[in-house]
Length: 139
Image (cartoon, rainbow, N blue to C red; front, side, top):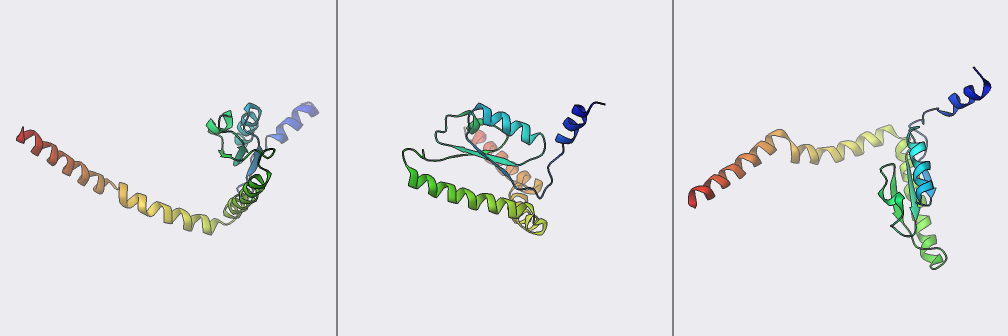
């Protein structure tokens, strides 16, 4: 095997869970291509741009954030970037803390299990069926 092929093989390393998310500056088609390639290697990412009409706002590879145009509104843009840094730090912290991920996951799962359990959905279907039958009899 040639040296070039071995290098390509090493470049296909999968991302580790503790790696921080990638922040892509821009949401044009080239950013989407970058996000797709990084997602194939298991990286989490998001992008930002001013103007939600860019393709990055419609991609499945990561969340896009709409920010102010730094040329027109530098102060709000700096505020946005500071907040984005906090989000990235929080995501990175979550990626490296399995206990916290489990705790937050369980907290989010509990209402879903309660709301969408088979028993609860069957009861709702029974009530709707009864209401529909009562209306049908009344017509």
